[in-house]
Image 1 (tube, rainbow, N blue to C red):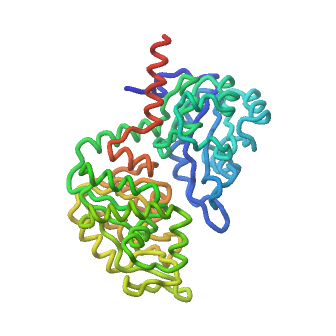
Image 2 (image 1 turned 90 degrees about the vertical axis):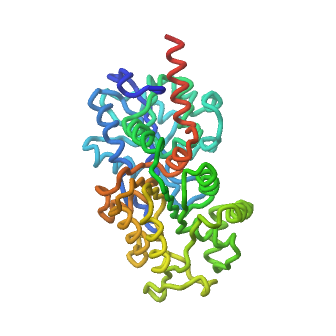
Length: 410
């Protein structure tokens, strides 16, 4: 392998910095964790480290500064403790004296959860591993550690401090989840069966504009179906007035300049990008469906409508490979589960090779009881999309470099 795995490392008694992606779907009102699937998928790595008597220091993030889901990791540590079945200590610090002293006092088999690493202003800066290694976070923590394990496949497309900084300073390897993701997806991406259909949904659209352009340019995707906020953004770029509340949501997630990029995409690929023609809204506590001709509306567009569901099924029926990233609506509300339920169930019952990625997407699949019928459930959203496009993932490249550096030293 081009990168090290846990099979290549001695971890007994060692202090291990374990970077995971526990950026969980939260309830917008209570901020409580809705689904712990991502934690359970990393459990094999954590259990292996604990059983081999490593001192495991968990590093993770939740949300981003300024976003509603930017929270402390305290409840994450509590959830991890329940899943693991042994104490998981939490420290409300990241690399200061409190964190350092707690790490120094750890015993073999202990698990420690640091606070939200995105509290650091420089965490999300895009830099090289060597540049990140000069930050206070890496400089103050790496002397306390023996090994860095990255099991955060969902964030593998981000060249951020805690994701790649340690690879310049410590022996580094992939965790069991990252290892499984890379092996499975490598096989799936080499020769995907055609036609290949991508469906994008959810509450973010800024990151997927380039993704859609690339997968259409390199013929990875034969058709793109849009739902959720991505669909709203494309409809707005196409000239539709969505209503003040819906358009404000677009401005909060992306920038006005991105609509120019979308317009160009629609010029180049309008015939293979499908957009909703009807929507589910809340009318006095009841689901009501409206069509494009009834826009703008002062009601949020919470779901795709019945006609759109039928059209999308017709496209998916022909597909041999299907990629799902993002639910079709606000599936947490039973009134607006219809689009997600109908489309996801249809995909799970098809004979296509189905790949599902992203926290909310996985949560929806699990809630619907469809997990067993999906070919591959990935923890990645953006990283999975980049991988499917054939792009190099910065985290994987940093781990490859770490292995090369270690071989040179030896």
